[in-house]
Image 1 (cartoon, rainbow, N blue to C red):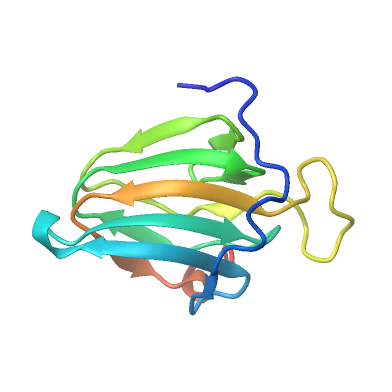
Image 2: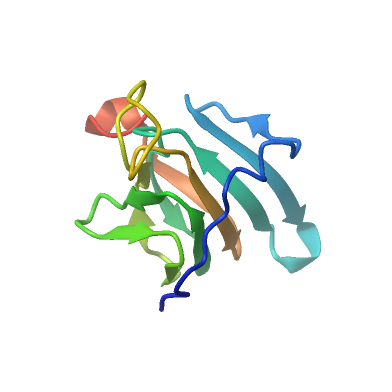
Length: 133
């Protein structure tokens, strides 16, 4: 699914982003304990940065608000893309672009709205698979 024309132009900088343990990845999260540890998050990944390979306990819904990411399985998603990962699926999203390069085109932060129903578990740290940060 695609939502044509969806794009956020820098208005998210004033939000209370919190660093994660993954370099270049920040988020604003909410865990719903009543819904089997479902987690609703806004995620901001700097160019070339991302999450290690992880598995979804339940399905995950992701809407790309700005920028884009490659998913470690050959697929690329850009602003306006919506994807649903089924329960048990694994992926390792990494923001498009190169760290430190000028911010234009694909080289800008990737901002996602995601709901991970049931939570996630790490399969491999980024250093183990030679992938994102």
